[in-house]
Length: 256
Image (cartoon, rainbow, N blue to C red):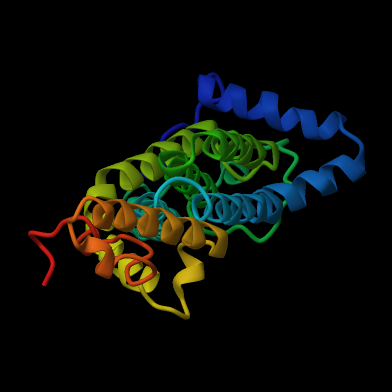
């Protein structure tokens, strides 16, 4: 399959010329900015959004929420890597040349692209991370999805991808992230739970202030149990500040 579209009358090619044509009319400094943004800037911004989401889920909700959130955020970049691996045989099967190989007059702002065009690696990675963040944190996820769309636009603007390369990347990144999320969380959640119970590594999952609040809640619950004659107060305090996944202080029938 040498290519998906070669005819200039095809809407895919027409849209390519329309978007890439903007680069011809833009000042040179803007094109240089778009080159950096499309190649590196948006991916750096997505990494920063993942870190912001991680900082947020460490401090909000319950300890269980933090564990699930951190596991989900770990999956976001891993999903991008898995999607890139899936794209390797796809590119080899489709064998679609870069648009500037078959179409003259394009303003190619990024040189040295000699591999196949379908699907776009950048669009795939950006959307995989965007969807992964959205699963965990809706507000930051919307920002991440917006950056992913901007990444796709920039790849066409730079003259290195057809619009359908970008759409295919969006579809691939979304499919890999969503379809493998249940398996990924089943594998990552126990690992993150173990980290959360470690005295040294716990801050990676739950902030200090949140853990202190967890201890206060656990201590209050234990005190209430002791006041009613339950005798669970001996289990309260800071012995299980995270409350995952071990028994709670007032579960007398489960205490060893």
